[in-house]
Length: 222
Ligand code: AR6
Image (cartoon, rainbow, N blue to C red; front, side, top):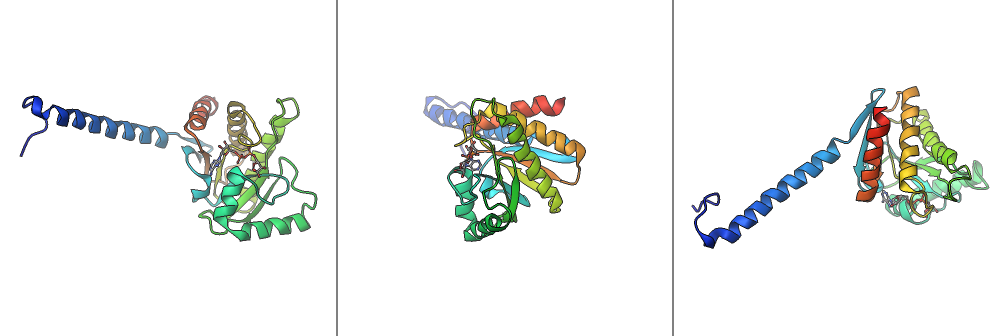
């Protein structure tokens, strides 16, 4: 059999280039995988993971929806959750509107419904603030959205929860600032409360992932 590792003249040059390319690609993929897999922290014995992915594919007990106050669905994460989760989610949202929140869910509050056909058993719907320059209480409201979602998960006895980057899409919140609040609020919550087992931050793009990773190294190391 021809040995690919031995130089046997220009005829095999192309093969060697391909081989090197294949080795390089394998290593790069592994490094990338390891890099992501290593982005894991422990706060008060609770695992915090930061990954790139689709929130609707998460197998945590609950996934969080970046909803709007109507709770009747929309685009982005909200649209994807209702599409994949099916009509049961909307049915329960309608009941919540009829009973608990007739005028809509206020910004920063959270409610819970079934996960319908999703892998997650529950969806926690919260409303993040619309970014209006940062001087209209956006920070507090975004922190409330994370805090109240975590609190609701604990009050229902759930152990694992996954968040998207709330408010950073249609609502225009800058990713850097939003990541800072998501991570600081979660850290504070987990320092006070250790009933959860895992919190996952699911970022949709590479650039969002990098921002979260950088911020997490800073904030969780403090
Ligand atoms: N998985 C994870 N992250 C996602 C996904 C996904 N499948 N799809 C988008 N993102 P957005 P908001 C990211 O707009 O800013 C809706 O219409 C996306 O890249 O879903 O809170 C609601 O009904 C972005 O970084 O939520 C509201 O009206 C982040 O998720 C309004 O949008 C949030 O983007 C809420 O806007």
